[in-house]
Every structure is written in structure tokens, then in C-alpha cells.
Length: 273
Image 1 (cartoon, rainbow, N blue to C red):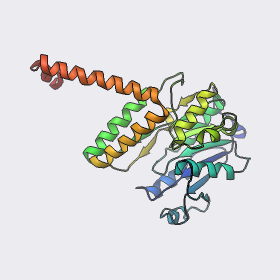
Image 2 (cartoon, helix red, strand yellow):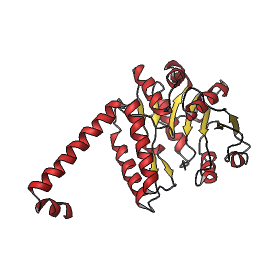
Image 3 (cartoon, rainbow, N blue to C red):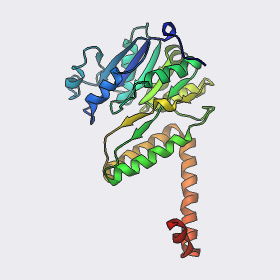
């Protein structure tokens, strides 16, 4: 399908929940405003409190709107921030885009996401993250873990899941799929949005051109805590994926044991090759 004409590009609200100062936060935000998007867009920062240390940096971007959501009471703080922001966004904005504060975006990121939901306005669209820091073992493990997740995305989109740091949905699809209702009591914005889409017979399309770079680093301890959170959230909100991963890795583990006991010479040789 050819690109949309300038007149047909929808108005975009870019929602950016922020907590604390991520490495490179200033550069990340500048990449959001540097989007080569032909339509109108506005950035909405959302923080829990005016006392958040990131507010000082956010105030350096007066072209954005800063929203103070207050402390969450019945859901995750990020989900609460997004709920609050969407209630405050004027009805004139036709598309919601979501970005995480640790994301550095390419100039065509917004155009790629919006084009996908213009093609299929009933569905959502998502990119993913790419960890560039590999300075230590924890960061390397995280990069390997993360890159393998990209292979789970399918062309038909039926089993794809949205990633909250780079996702898009039209206001009409957001409302008709009752995403706000699905967010109630949730700690995961993206898995809950995915569930809302699936309940309504819709899907999440993967957009390779919407992959966002993150530059922060992890040591081994922080990687393990990060990995535990990822597994726990997946276990709660996407049990089919969690179970598939468990069975696959159990099979791999037992194959290693069998190879070690019965082919103790050949197995290391194969690995070295």
C-alpha cells in the first residue's frame, strides 16, 4: 500500500511515562521530537510526582505537556500513569503511541508505526527493543535473551504481543477493545493491551522499523532481577508463552544431560566445532 498523503496522516499523541533519570534520557527525548512525521504529533510526559528527579529534565522541553498522575492505588504505577494521561488527552488526537523513557528512536519510527495501523486500523502495532550495551556479562546475557524474543513475532500476528516501549493503536480501536477496562488492576500495560485485542478477535502487528535502541547497562545481579520480572509477568499474563519456553528449555536441558553422560567425548567436540 502506498504511503498516506500528508492530508491523511492522523494526529498522534505520544505517551511517555517517566520514572527517574534513565541513562541518556535527554538524548532519548530529543530523538522523540526529531521524528520525521508529516502529520501533527504532541508528546505527553507522565510522572507519578512533581518530585520525580526526571521532572527537571522534562521541563527543558516546553513543547510537551507534563502530566502528574499521583500514586497508583489498584494497579501498576506505569499503567496508572497511562490511564491518567489518556483521560487528559484531547479527543482531537486520533492515534496513541507509547514510548519508554529509555528508548532512543530512529527518525522514521513514528511514521512506520502509524503507517501500519493506517493499513489495519482494527489492529495494534508494535516494535521492540534492542539492547546496545554489552560492556559486562549481565548486559551481554540481557542482549542475547532479548534478541531471541524477536524471533517469536509471526507474520499473521495472531500470537504476537505488544511491547509497551514501542506500540501504537488508534483511539477507536483502543476504545472499542476496552483497553482501559483490561488495564484495571493490571501491572502490565502491554500484555493487558494484547489480551484486550485478542478478546475482540484482533491482533498485534510487528513493525521491524519500529525497533527502539536502549543504551543502559546491567550487571549480572541486576540482570537476574530483570529476568525474574520478565518471567513472572509472562507467567501471569501470557501463560501459554511461559509454558512453551519452559518445555523447550527442559528438553534442551535433558538433551545436554544425556549428551554429557553417554557421549562425554563427542559432545564437547561438537560444541567446539
